[in-house]
Length: 469
Image (cartoon, rainbow, N blue to C red; front, side, top):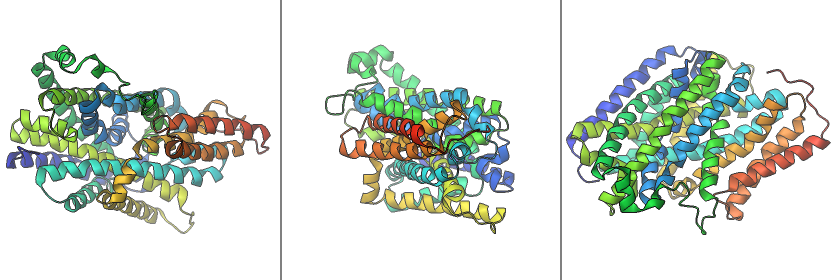
């Protein structure tokens, strides 16, 4: 990336140091493993929202959105648009049910209240694998941005990513993740709002973009071609919407709230904060297509900031984009570590809370390390293509049995939930890899999950007589 100067590096360091100080301060709030995982169930709506945006506004929702908009147009908005809608639905329709399960700390434990302990491990394994794909996506978003700015090697950038992500979350847990999410959003908002205003002025507004790129640039379905399938963009959007409802990171934010009202309001606030970010980044990406059509699409957003702001200011804003990837990585890594410790590992009566906290922190370090190692290998490049599969797997594992548990209490069988949780992701994977349904695989998975749930529920005998929520 041309135009990088010492002043830009200084700005990036300022952004990093400011957010890091706030995150380090959060360490004082962690007294036990419950504090680390769900903030001791004391989180305010702002903290819940901070945890949510810390996880969902990453490199994909900022740099990736501008990159897609540079190539295709407004359809690049689907990620943050879908996540925003999902957060509002989570808050309005589901947070009250999730929060009432006061002893739960993971989404798999939420399921166990209806379907028993057998469902916990299988859903946790599927969910952890799916979320790891997203973690890798955030790591691979950070590394090229850092290498283009500092000219360091990919390996060095991966090491820096590892150190910073661990610093964000290993000591402060969800408190640090929430603080980091709020802090990065303040920087990102300032950067993308001002940038979008400058971009629109430079092209005579929305009409100028239309004149230069055509009306089709405003379509949310421009990737839905014969090659991709006419429902490709719809499938991507639905995948992001539904993925929010069943992702450990967001459910963990709900469970951290001080009461059901705080959980609901935090989800809605998180969704509203996320909504405009993608739209503004898409505008910048489209304007860069007009102004600098020969650049690499992935450089659209950071290069715009380099070209239009004084060095230190540009550095602070680019630092915010880098923090977007790092804090999202941290939140997702914490959610996977929580699921592994709580739901996958065998229970030990001899493990005290101090040891439990240590185990979770060790798994965070391992997960972050693996994502950094994979990110600089050919294997990591291959896994990166699974990002949409990630949302589909999460959705098809949980959505059907979870909604049934919430809205049809006392009328279900345990076997139906377990069968649906297995059939959904298996069909999702088959559709993705073997049926050419990369844009609509989530629909195939949900269909299989629903059909299997109904059939098994009709014939199974292990009916749940009563569900306490």
